[in-house]
Image (tube, rainbow, N blue to C red):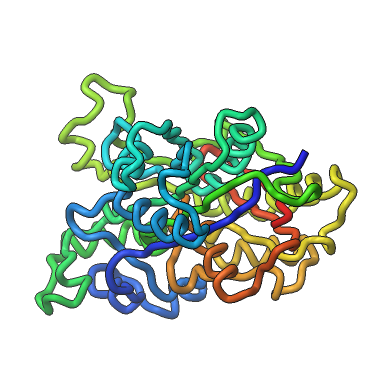
Length: 352
């Protein structure tokens, strides 16, 4: 039985690009330092009041138009984000309401940067079970809210005033995390493949809660009474904590292993893959993963330079770009791979 395939994609990044030079206005950093460590040149951020459901809606509109279907044909939404409009409810239903299809089920998942491998497996199960026929998957994140600076007017070049020494020092303390992220959304419309040997061929995904603190958000969790206190701001717990060294090690070891395992299960080799669409966390990570797999550079595209890490949005954004430039076509065998907070990691094989 054929699995689901992608019939439409769309992406959205808010506002004007924020360059590495702009970050140097609010923290001790520079373009060369960021490029060498991450490959990132610029990123986008939401403005005050702009939410992740807004980003998801814009990407979803484009994906639905690209698929050549009406929004009313969507009968299930799978929404992935770690930066929701509210702690609860999740934003999937809000995306549906903005699309004019309120009432259809919307499932919110929390696999962070590994949203697509998990989301595609869920969507395939929904379609193969008959619970849905046309699924809208949306991956979106708005990280601006946990950035360590408050001088947004200076960052955006709207003011040339000096930021305070205290604010500059606070932002600099967290530059290892904050330089990585940007805001954006990617969406896919999914249906059962019309080709007998097409669609989602298989997936292999993993979770290890013992590694949860490699990257996590300390503040706002429901471990205290009340769950949110003024002290969280004072202790800067609204900013993610990251063990960069061990997170890097996990990514460059676990991702090649899971890809090789998945292709072997299906009697394939890495050479059979036409395109690897990888999560965009760090260009150095993806380069080492590619080398470990023995895949040529042209099969492992990257766009982290212009968007940064948009977490749940990265793979959808990159796939949309690859489709629109004609890099991926019908019949191609694509491998989606990602690792994210949780720790979650995995890969999916799909023949488009």
